[in-house]
Length: 493
Image 1 (cartoon, rainbow, N blue to C red):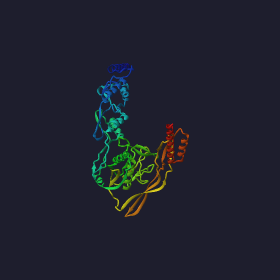
Image 2: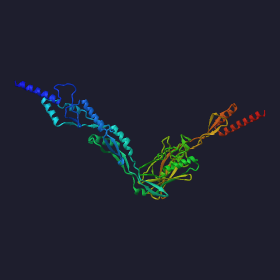
Image 3: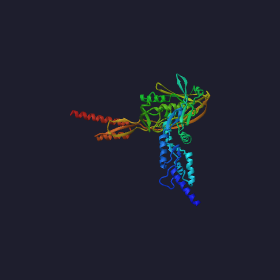
Image 4: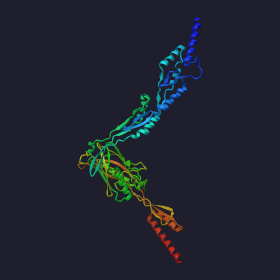
C-alpha cells in the first residue's frame, strides 16, 4: 500500500514539473534551452539550439562588429577600425550543447532542483571570439604602415666654400609581423567588448647625427678632373647632370655608395639627352650617353682618397679622357656599376664641380695620413692590338656611289692599374688595383653595288674585296665619269 502511494506521489510531482517548467516527461519535438540560461547576458530560455545560435550571430553583427578600436601607429598617429574590420567570429559554439544539457540529466528530483536554481540564479555562458589574421595583416599593411617615416641622417651642405650641418630626422616604422601578434592577443585575451586602444609595435631609428664628427670634415682626401671639351652639347649636358646628381652626398662610415643608383634613371625626366655611348663594341646613341665619364672621374677621386672600391668595370672599348685601366663604366643594360664604401671612421662629403667643359670630384673628410705619404696611380699597358684595314660591307640595295662610314677604328688594349705609395720621396708600396681588357674594333664602310652595268658591278665588287676605301672611291669616280660621258653623248645626238 505504501509503495503504491509513493509511486502515485512521484507521478503527481512529475506532472507538476511538466506544467510549471515546460519539461515533458518524454521527448516531444526539438529540445529548447531552459529559462534562466543566458549567453553573454542574453536570455535564450525557450529557444532551440539554432534559434540561440542565430541570436548570438545577430548580437555579433549588430553590436560587436561596430565596436571601434584605435590603432596607434608611427609618430602617435591613430587609425580607427572596428572589430568587424578585424574579422571577428564566434569561437565557442559548443556552449549551446552544454546549455541544452542543463536540467536534462539525473532523476526527476535532481532536474527539479536544477530548474529551481535557475530561477534564483541564472547561468550565463560567456562568448569567446577569434579574429582573421589575414585581415589584421591587410589593415596594418594598407592603413597603418603608410605613416612610416624614414630615418634621415644628418648631412653636410657646402656653399661658398663653407660647410653647414643639416639636421637629421628620426625614423619610425611599423613592425607589421609583431604588431599582428599584438592586435590578435589584445582582441582574444584583453578586449572587454568595448572600444579600446591598441599600441602597435613601432621601430624607432635615430639618425646618425654626430655634429662633432661632421665638424671634422674639412680636408680634401682625393680629387680628380677630366675634360669633355670635344663633347657635343647633349653629351656635355649628360655629364653635367650626372655630376649634379652626385654633388652634395654625405656618406657615413660603413655606408656603400652606388653611382648607378645616384644617377639613374636615364630618362628625359631625370635630365638626360641622347648621346653616343658604347654598347657591345659599337658606338650607339642612348639616353645618358657620356655618364661613364662621371663615374670614371669619381673613381679616380675615390682611389686618391684611398676608399674601398667594391665594384668596378672597365669599358668595352678604350676611352680617351683617362689612361687605360683608369676608367669605371656603368650601364643599365649590363648591370655595370661603380661602388665604393666609406672605410674611414668619420663621414665623407662628395663635391662635384663643372667648370667650363671640365668635371671635378673632390672628396672631403678628415685627413689622418702623414703629410709625407703620397699616392699616385700608374697605367701599365701590357698589349696593344691595332685594328686591321677597313672592313667593307656590300649594300645591294644602294646604288654605286653610296659610301657611308660605319664604326670608327678602336685600338685594343690589355692594361693594369697600379697604386704607388711613397713616403718622403721613397717608394714603400706598389699594388695592382685592377686589370682591364678593351676590344679592338676596325673601321667599317657600307658600299652601294646596285647598277645595271655589269662591268661597273664587277669593278665595285673587286674594290670591296680589296679592302681599300681608296679603291672604292676610285671606282665610284670612274663610274660617275662614265655615266656623265654617256649622258653628254646622248644629249649630243
